[in-house]
Amino acid sequence: MFQRQLHDATPRHEKVYGFYERLYTTIDFLAGLTFLLGSVLFFWQSTQEVATWAFVIGSALFVARPASRFAREYHLARLPLPGDDD
Image (cartoon, rainbow, N blue to C red; front, top):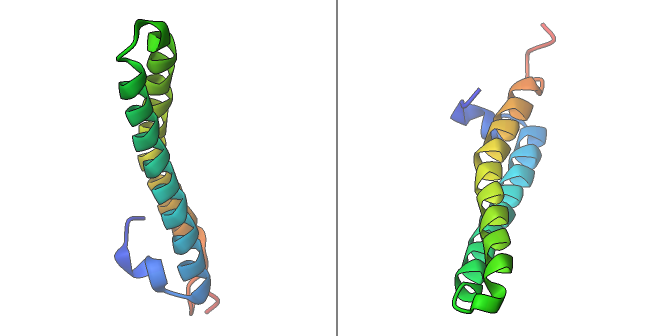
């Protein structure tokens, strides 16, 4: 796991790598967006509870970032490489 050469070892590896990169970017964007939303909502007393939940959701998304990287590397490591049949 965590071997750079697995990212593009085969067309299937490239496809899997691309999927997880898009997933990571989406998670990253949503985490930042929820933290920004929470920050703005925290200005008003009436929306502070919603803001707190936005921070909790953003925090969960920040945990999902490295989890998606780990899942990507695990997935890539399990894919067959050329010559594995030998």
